[in-house]
Image 1: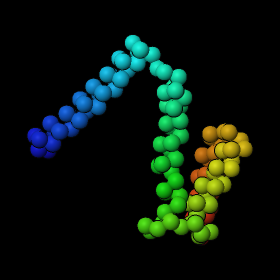
Image 2: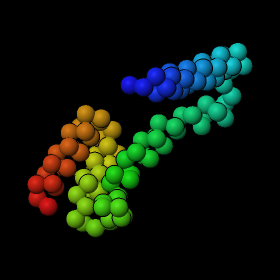
Image 3: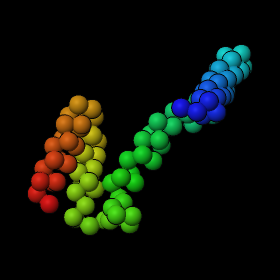
Length: 106
């Protein structure tokens, strides 16, 4: 690996570490405001949604809302199971089974 790539990677890591430590240091002294605490609570849901939804809706570079999109159907089945049971293990198992079954059938 070239030396400048190693330096770039190390610099990016150092900057990332410094910004996180800096934010924790400031929040430790000042405390986290209530509005920020309420907002930060939704970050994991937003990130997960941003990662999952495109993989469910986009096929071959275009939005596919048809019944032939087995990932979308499996995602809908999985969402219903998650909503009704609130059981992570069961949701993952049903989602995996739905994808495998629909992939085999379609």
